[in-house]
Image (cartoon, each protein chain N blue to C red):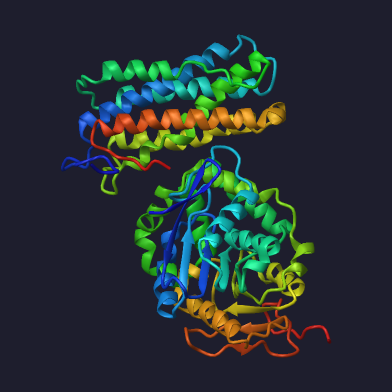
Length: 199
Length: 308
């Protein structure tokens, strides 16, 4: 077991079974975000902040598209079961302690997006000798960088004035989402011989 | 790897050196992690000190709160670590953001300390530092941890340090990039961009205090340290020659020697702060030189200071 992908092939590429597992997880998570953001996006924007919602939809879709094309996919028998557990975990979980249901649903989506964008660092799995010209390597680096930018919308919303009165509820919901998402991520990685730190 | 518990969060720490010896606690800067003090562990343990290092909340192997990190939490975590050290003399040193946490600890729990060493430190955010901090935060958001490191390295260390590693900077940056998550760094940065100045409380620090400032520190220049020197009664300012903001990384032997000598002087009853200004030697073990009388230590050219 290692904290990184490997062993790499002589061209510095990540083993296909590890590519498949990681790309499947990321496709599931970012795909769920793309769907949920698309569902929340109105046909006609009425507020300035909704422009960010539009951006999130298409950036999430871009990540999925990128992974579908950059990954060397191979059969992974565990994916049937794993995918079901992942998809179930992405279901909306309205935050407890926020009586305004539309607001609670928005918090749910923001906490999931925060957990995925902040807590999942696929580029940190790349060993030093990974081939920078390989599309899968480049895709992971791009996804991690893009996630840091997408995250800003979640931070602004979750720390924003609308939720000041619900700070404890938001914090609890967010920490729960982080723990849950990280658990799924570490479990998916352990199945292909990668151990990541728990902090 | 031992951990302390602060609420639902875990703080990773390490103790080295003889259990009954006077202790030094070292507090990391923003993008650092506990292993960066390894040269200090060797040097201070060899001088018969016990050494405590740790990762702040949001750093390294400590837990990383997802959204809210307050300086109060960092001070509380530091207090837990100090409690692990027993009743013997404890010296506290912190670099940059860690120096700010050390100052706050000294204000709230000064009775637990024998001495304080703020390094590359600030008690308030003057406009330059505020704007720089905000710009660095934006850099982190737009370019990730790696871009933040790209900006901080040339600001914080000298050409002499950078020259030999210029063709392997990715390796130099890699460990810091791996152990520090961008969202946690952002939380840490935001926890000091909106902090309230400590200046009015500095006079309550009655401890022996050695303030260390790099001669060429760009991020926290001399004037920022002058606030500490002017307000902390038993303090002295020591200027590290040819040093930038991150002199603890660039000059570990010299800095560890200065820390050890400060603690030895305090324990022997020799320390006299007197709000004096000193120039550190170029090498560990050398003599400190009093800043020339009559000249203004806040200037970069030898201009005579105001008459006293």
